[in-house]
Amino acid sequence: MMSVQDFLEKRFNLSKCGTNPKTEMTAGVTTFMTMAYILAVNPGILSAAGMDPAAVFGATALSAFIATLFMAFAANMPFALAPGMGLNAFFAFTVVQVMGYTWQFALTAVFLEGIIFLILTATNLREAIVNCIPLPIKHAISAGIGLFIAFIGFKNAGIVVSHPATLVTLGNMISGPALVCVSGLIITGILIAKKVKGALLFGILASTVIGIFCGVTDLAHFDMSAMFKMPDMSPILFQLDFHQIFTFDMALVLMTFLFVDMFDTVGTLVGVASKACMLDENGCVPRAKQALFADAIGTTLGALMGTSTVTTYVESAAGVAEGGRTGLTALTVAILFGLALFVAPLFLLIPGAATAPTLIIVGLFMMTPIKNIDLEEYTDSIPAFLTIVMMPFTFSIAEGIVFGMMSYVLLKLLTGRQKEIPVLAYFLFVLFIGKFMMH
Image 1: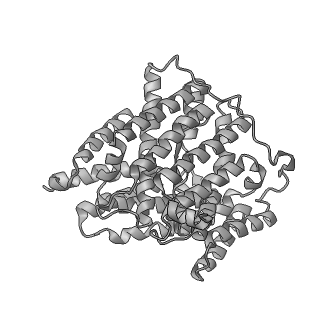
Image 2: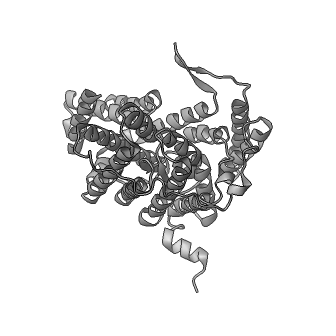
Image 3: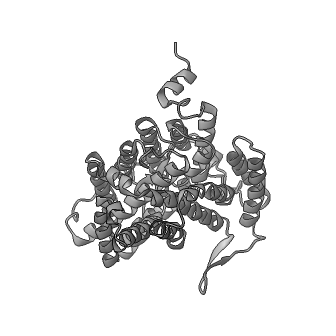
């Protein structure tokens, strides 16, 4: 009879990928811990659209479980998926509150987006878009994501805050969240310097404990009675509204969902794969088609369950930094999302300030592919630089890709090096121009 370890080895090709079950599972737990905030945040945001928060919690966890499970077994990649930040805010605050449509209308747009992505993925168009991104831009995407998630970490800890005159400024460094983050950063840094396996995970756990003494980890609202109970999803299940699918507003909403999700997912796949040295000899993401199917399936089923667009999470970089290289990392994340359906109060104890140190340090790890960019080849390095800096400056992975690809096409074209431009890049250039005109 085959042992569990032999099954995992055969199913996920662990030895070939230079990893083992312990490393993969630790990476999976780390990724989950850095993105578990979505279980608390998504219900809060979508409740602003009039949706039942407990039901949205169930839809969030279940859609993440299914999509990440598909990523694990179909793509064998260490990426996790869940309803995406940004798109959930557009869903609740723009489509419902500003445009005045029902949340059922918004869910229908998300459902149609998922169907379109299934078709685009099946016809290899999305994979072609991934593969047409030039190698310097792919390396830059990894570095840009590094700055972006580090910025998120500082923001979550209140170390970087908004300011009307300077846009951002330093926050209160003696506040509870800031103290938790700084303490966690020091602890995690020491563990990494000493090459302790699971350093990022231990850093999150230590930060959560420190948060108790700083008033950040909220034990007072730990609801034991809610343990081991699956939330009732019936108020939002299968609540689609097809009455207005041929309106201009539906087209506008649908295009926004499509554009942001397309390039956020592409950016995350390319950037994290580049950091993990998973790109093949041609600079392509292996099994990209299967990975893209995961978010298309997650988005389609998520809309039926009652949640906004499901996308690949940039926090997957935390697991990759811990050594995650295969679908076993994703499987671990999926299992934890499944468990979260029944033990939500336990996972929701982890505050954003406790995961902030991990995001900041992973930001450093994600910068390493920049070494592969020839900074003195300016038709490569200028687009790469714009890709990197525009991600944190616009708070969007997608916008970083837009600036990088547009400048790459223009510089190559205007310096007589058009042969270096992939054919599909011209299509993206026109698409991006159209996006700016519609903005």
